[in-house]
Image (cartoon, rainbow, N blue to C red; front, side, top):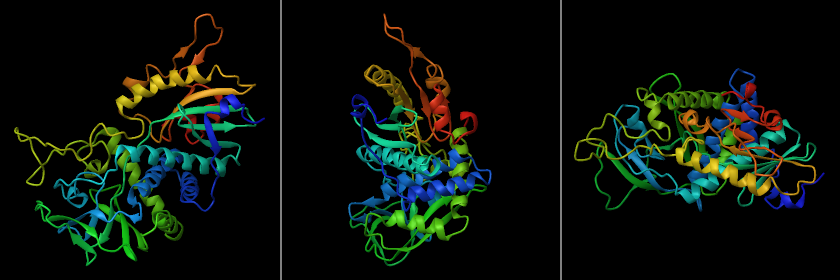
Length: 401
């Protein structure tokens, strides 16, 4: 039975799966890894970070050529995402540089789009098209429909990557120092790339078992178009045995250090929301007390749904969407609402979500009682207050992270 018009007004057309897409390749590779003992949900979460990253790398006409960092101690020019030279971080040295984190108006569409793409390809691969993914219309961010089961899930998205791999290219004649730039400590320079055709690119990825990093080699690419990163990553995963497994293992180590706030391992300083470095030298701004004055990544940065302001807003939003949509004429359909993200609130769930995750509500004089959250859904943890949610989002055993 098709979606009732009163409900269909809150979602756009269903996304069309693409077997040749990077998202489908990542889903298939994640499923392969799950057969080798790596949790499927966490492999999907690592995949989400790659999908978001490629949206950040591109400018209007291909790769962003401005904002590159030359580091004398490194063999590479580096496109820095957060505010520190990543090569020097792994030497336990911290040199401040303004990173290339996009404006908030870019981040939201990039993360929501990556999540929709990944879910679309996941359900196309695992559910034979029975679950369809739709871009939402206000106040809904995303809708998932099950015509056979006559169920629709309206979701609020709160998402953000754990890790955006810096892009690197070997030192050479392609780097142009920024004219008139102030000298930087530690033999660093800001500049731009002269050419994006045939450029050798890699991703800088922390090792999972030591305080170092490795390069995910993408080869020589023509980075002038908007699809170069999709094509380069997909080709690398298909042609290079174990490279995706190595990346996921590195990502899992980053996730562990983020959850534990383990500041003693250098890879921690590559995670978003890592805050201020502890060991500063001549390359880091300090305040009048000699304490670090800038962050590598603002601790209020959202990693998944793990931001207190986002949790508070989304809790109200669930009530607002429930009030608006659960009273619509559903024509026999089940209407559910949920919070959706790439990662659960690892640091703040217990304090800010756990007291509310099983709340039910109703209106005076009515006979029905509703869940505030029919589901709190991420690749790392699932709270299912409705059977449909628990059955459909099946990448974690028993919904556990």
